[in-house]
Image 1: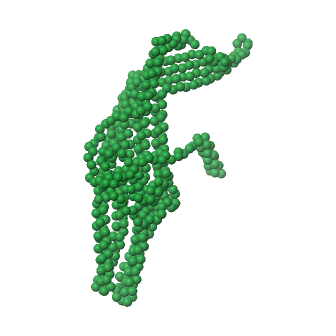
Image 2: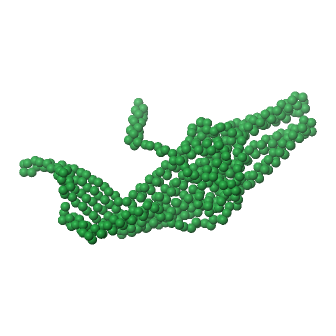
Image 3: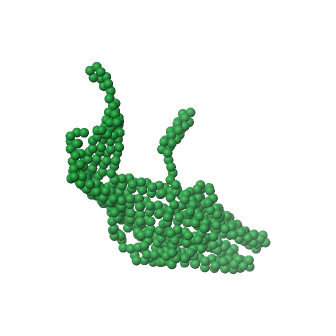
Length: 500
């Protein structure tokens, strides 16, 4: 140990030195403890929020919104999707990454401690004599940067807010997935219903064809009437082919959403749409802002951008770092602790000339924070618009279905009367054909309209959705060395095949 290091060590052994050391350690502990929580900065919502929505139901909407439909098949499908969907698993992986980055960003709030050990052997020749000598060293080095201006804390807060936003993004992905499964399922149910309607229409059209054919053979009608009816039968067969193709497509889509092969059957054949429950309670727009996961995600993005701005500003100020170490060495291991050296040092660094780099970073992060705030406002507007759109669509869709029901009833009466008059020979076949086409088109349109009404309710539930507790799937485990070996083996096999 040199005289300089001995004097430095003795200085910290004096009462004054010990008191300064304790004060310094207390400051370090206080700084570390202050870094255990995020600093949330309140800010005003960047737009005026209406006091209430234009419509509201009375039935409370459960967190798992699909439970209000009381459809056991739908509930089972959504449960499978939440467990197996690869897109949702990817969102879980992004959340894990964000949480790991938070831990990484917060590591600088704590002191570092590194241990080192070494050995060396020297062989020499002096005055015709050869010899060798050995030496051993051990050492501990500790370092810590005092977060005087909150730069490290702000960086850690930004990462924590990013992780919180990722968690809300996961909830948004789950909510969107549940709505996609429900929408796909009821589109499939509608197509099954359309298939049943077309089969019934084909039977009816064939019966009419037999009647017209009989009249043609007896000379009561011309061949054009029979040909037109045959065309109607063939048209129904063509529409049935299209419906069968749509059924396959929706079956494939539903299987993929559930994380299965497109060819795997995942749902029973159901051809009747669910009866919608009472309209859910919309609550207040202010409550919607607090509970919708995509809005909360945008809120955390603003907080993260604000923390990044604070870190960029603090980066322009001086940094104070502390280092402490102890080293020991000897020619034998038993001599290691006979000779030792302890050091304690403080380092102050401040930027003087950086070509405007740090100022430019402050300007950039300030613009990012402004962008995040504007995005937050737009997200709120979009959410309010989605609720109002779903409310308006459901209201007018119900009126439309009522009109279609009345039209279908009238169309049925027209078909009966026109057919009777046709058999009596008072009207031509074109009137019968027009009446049949109108009735059959309305039958298909009503089913589609009812499915659209169900879709409107799904959109309303998604727009009002809050999220629920998700079960974390098991993460894929990778062995880096094994993966490398497999890749190398695959490469060798590929080279052997191509060279052969």
